[in-house]
Structure formats: structure tokens, C-alpha cells
Length: 156
Image (cartoon, rainbow, N blue to C red; front, side):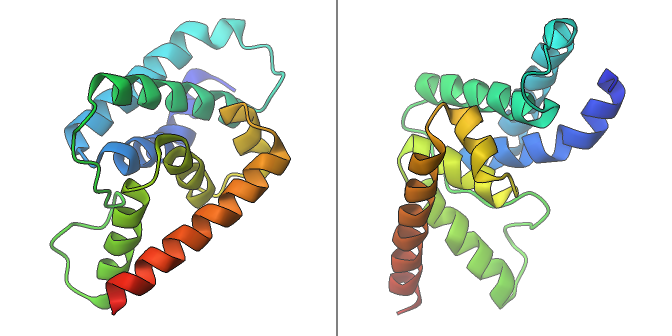
């Protein structure tokens, strides 16, 4: 797989991960660009011990965690890319409520559920985060329960 194909395949997913974490379009674009600069720099050394996607999400996760450490205290109310904040309608408000609830989670839980929402398998999330697959399964289950409880409270 060449860099251009990797970029086309993963840009949106990496951007949404960054956007979901920080809810700042400009920052998310900068971070996604930083991810792909690192991918470009390290692609020749990629050994193929995991899928390219897992490797890229690991880089993106590390970039987001480092940026989060630098920017403690910023607003992280997340709105998924592609749905403008001002768009009316029940679906948009439910999505906003979900991502708002995600933004209140601890950092690692926020990353895990963001990767899960991107459609990554639990085994891939385990490789990306360095947590055992069993632990990912348990944490995702607990995160879903916490989110469901928060969303029910918001609806009342």
C-alpha cells in the first residue's frame, strides 16, 4: 500500500478521531496532518506486524494523548464530523448528546469508545491502546452503560 492510498483510506477516520477528542476542527485537521506526517516518515520502517489501520490509529491515539496532556482544561464537547452543530433535528441532537457524554469520559475511555465508534474491532483497539482484549471488552461494556445512563438523564 502506498502513502497516497493510505492517506485516502484513513484521512477521514483519523480526522473524526481527532475531532471527537477535541471538537476543534482546526486542531483536528492539524493533528490529523501530524499523524500523516509521522506515517510518511515511518512507513518505510513499518514491519507489518499489525494492519496498517491499527498502526495508524496507534499513531493517532498517541498524538491525541500527547496533545491532551498539553491542553488540559480545554472544552472537549464532541460533535462528529459531517454533522454541523447548528443542524436541527432529533438525530443530530441525539448524536450531539452522545458525543457530549463521550467528552465527559476519562481520557482512555474516550479514546476506546471513539475507536469503537469508528468500527474497529476490540482486538484492534487492544493493540492500539496496549490494553488486553478482555479488558477492552469489559471497558467498552462499562462505557456503554455509563453513556446510556448519561443519555437517559439528559432526556428526562
